[in-house]
Amino acid sequence: MSNQQLTPLATGTMSGIGRATGFELASPGEPVVGNIEAALERNRAFAAAGGHQGAVVFPNLRLFVITCLDPRVDPAHFLGLGLSDAMVVRNVGGRVTSNVINDVAFISQIAENALPEGPLFEVAVIHHNQCGAGALADDSFRHRYAERIGAEESTLRQHAVLAPAAPVTRDVERLRSAPAISPRVRMSGRVYDVVTGLVETVIPAGR
Image (tube, rainbow, N blue to C red; front, side, top):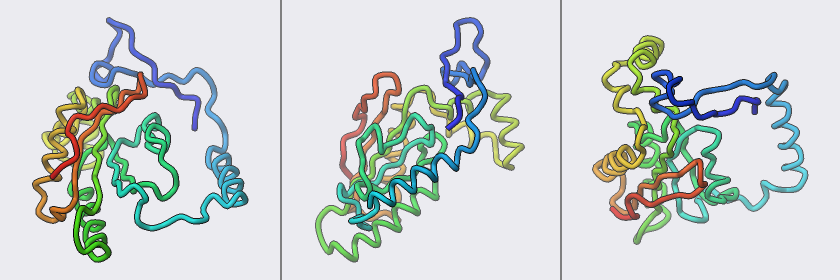
């Protein structure tokens, strides 16, 4: 991980992106050299200690987490998840895309084969405050990004995360209305506060 820090923007000095996200990137020092090498060193310690042993395919908590790729928002830490506790999908903003729906449908079909009756698992959509996906609400950033990836600006605007309770509600509803997902899968919506470290329930688990 680099030395980059997420720093609140001072009032009156906010850029358009800063107004959308609540932070800006600051680089107070030189970045750490050889990031992957540091991670591989940890991997060797993990393997030597047998940390991978006893892992199972179907999650112990019957939990499928959809959340943001922001490095502050790691469910292994803020939810205390261990290896094999949950399946996790992370993308920009933790949004429910068509690919995410397909992933949930795939796992639900596998689970149906193993569990002939009863609930299969819970999908927890977890958005967070100070989300970088808020940058998609900035016209200039969104226009440049749309050109970069060859996407429609209007669709990108829908992926902005400003007040997270609203988009997390829309994403849970999108999951619940997806015909490809088994009705035996429960869905919930939560919001993680990167300042307090707490997760708030917006939509309780249900179908």
